[in-house]
Length: 340
Image (cartoon, rainbow, N blue to C red; front, side):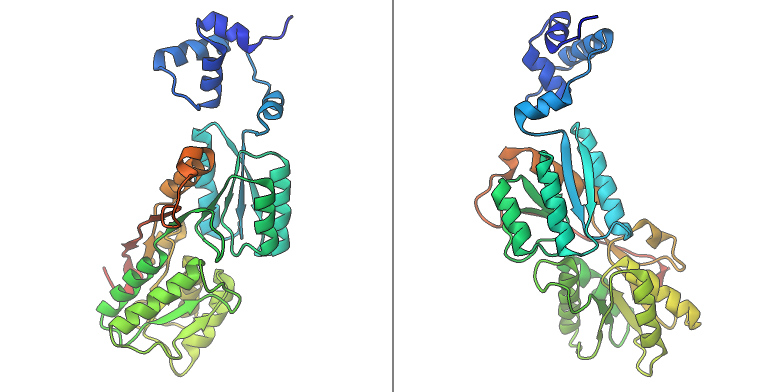
């Protein structure tokens, strides 16, 4: 039996091979709904299967998008990867995920591997792109969009949250409950000073405290982003002689660790300790008490990143401001802050 070709589909559907390609690839040009239905019916009737390898060789691109994240174990990045996968599927693409564990060498490894696979584009939720990684991107002339973070010195198109403004919202809300001050659980000494969301969370905390005429001296605590290490740090803070009345955590994972430490020390939350986090991961609503936090629209951000990395027209922009798409943050109020 002869192999079914794209010409066969076009003849049966009464259209051109170009239109068949637009239907199969979901673009780049729109196809009228009636024509699309005829093409899909012809594909089904003939049992046509596109030769993806041949397509990739001809176009020098595959139907793959590379996504590089720092830690798949963190719920935030797991949820973000899931959102990117769904957004890519809407565009007829599949996603390859590389997890760096915050190791620069692994980031370069995945960059080279994905670019070597001729991915359609790269979405990087990078903790801090080093010079070697930036050089790889430039050498391959890769389509790249930064998601969630924008490391210093990197001028790629970026999709981010208003991290600084969101942190201010959370800290102001805690102060409105009448606390003398709010402590902050930030990142570690290795956290980049520019372009990293946690750095913006800390700066938002500082600004909210200054607005209220409060000192930040001695009230910023370092902790890794995960709940397990944050729990250990929180045990020391909460058992100490200068226990804060409220804590703003740079991530929800940290905040969940703080809640666990408070429970172990038999501290009432929010009666003796108010807590707020950032990210609104799914577990935030299941925590006991429910965690007050800051949310962003991860689905919309993922869709924007996928669209930007696939559509050249959207990616071409002149100024740095035009190359930065900032999504608003919103406060999600639950019981851990003292509300309800």
